[in-house]
Image (cartoon, rainbow, N blue to C red):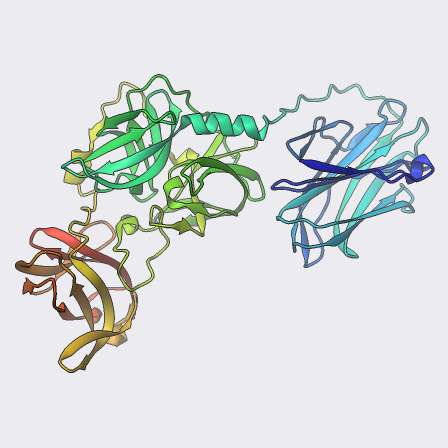
Amino acid sequence: MCRTFIPKVHGLAEKLMLTVFVWAVPVMAQSQAPTNQASAGGAVPSGPTFRMVRATSGSKGVERDGRFVIEDPRTQFHAGQDHKVIVYFEWEGALGPHKFEALWKNPSGKVVVVSDFQFEPHKSPFSGYWSMLLDDDPAIGFWTLEARIDGEAAGNYSFEVTSNPSTTPVAHVRIPPSEREIYRQAEAATVYVEKLDASGKPLGRASGFFLAPNRVITTFGSIDGASGLRIILAGGKSLTTNQITSWNRWQDWAVLSVDSTEVSALKPAPDKSANVGEHCYSLGISPAGIRTILEASITGDSDQAPAGRRLSLSVSFDSLAVGGPVLTEFGEVIALLGGSLLPGAAIATPTSAGASPPMAGSAGTVPAAFAVPIDLVKLPDSNVASSTLADLASMGQFIPPLEGPDRVGFGALALGLDKQKGIAWPRQTRDLFSHSDGQIVLFISWQPKPKLKGVAIARFYDLNNRQVGELKPANVNLNPNSLNTTYWPFSVAAFPPGIYRADVFFGDAPVWREFFRVVP
């Protein structure tokens, strides 16, 4: 939706048009026609409060869904041939009401026009553009547009007006589809990926999407520990599969073989499309369970060894959206939402006391949005044999799912125990320990519904699923109506610095899990 304000001021040079679009990247536009025409080109961000993300210029532009696109980006304009210069800026900075100014300087450096307006962006980055009419005899040379926000320098952009006629054909510029079209295509190609245990009971749900015929991309965490997978298409139809064509546990992606020819696949973006500052889209989940389109920008690009490259996005999303596509403004896939930095962290115990490390697929909202660049995902040829979920489990790629969630009421790693009236309770629970802490405690408070009797044991694993320790088994008699606790003291100094996983088993089934870090 948009609002257009056209003040009625006498004189073409004074005419101002400001258009504000209520959109993820608000757009502001002004038109100027000074006596000596001016416009702008390559800009350099300045000032600590506002950072110019990018700027461009051209003679033609179009507004689509609140976004302004320069159709013929260039920095050289030709007297008598070009009749308009449009300059477009994007900034990052503080939200709230601001005064925006443009100082148009002719080739001699003289300010010939100053235009200003008030605008209140509600999201960052925000953008704006100015247009200037060129008469038949404009000043020849390099012009500059100096942008200011609240009196603070917010970028300069220079362009050239030349008297030589243009003989170079203008390159064709791709016009992005509308937001509605991007949503329609992405929503149709996006699925739910439901993990099933050996009995067919659901263990968890995330998202995925078709990137090729019969190939669904999702995060590795979305399939970790599954005995089967249920794929739920956009129309509600369900399919099952246990076939995995390729995967990478640390990079957190998997390609599933899904027998469905009725879904149109999304297209991957060209190489080097994922750049910091670029706008992108993803699909969220509304409280009613309906997929929604989210607009964001890429705010970071880092190599999280050994997990690999990760993109950071300026958006939070529901955990059900993990594994869904991240799209360019042309609706092409640049990444998939998620990107756990610790394999298996998505299936840590929600009732554990420590703060779990960054992960994808946990319950609730994922505040720090990571994404896995799509160029990490390897799509094998259709004639390459698939592996099964059982194959991955036998290779040690999977962490077994937790069973009996109704057995453990609380669990924690702690520096010690406090005992009052014969009852022990953990003291200073945490998930970060130092060798100087010496002996620490793994504590479990049981909360069984039926009466149970058996053996509990605690085991430790590194992040490659290798067992690195085990504590003495404990006989437990679990009574539903009484406090049942078990604890194991152990020396944290025996663990080399690193990140570990603690699993508590009751019988043969893991019933509690926590990740913890050890430092020297």
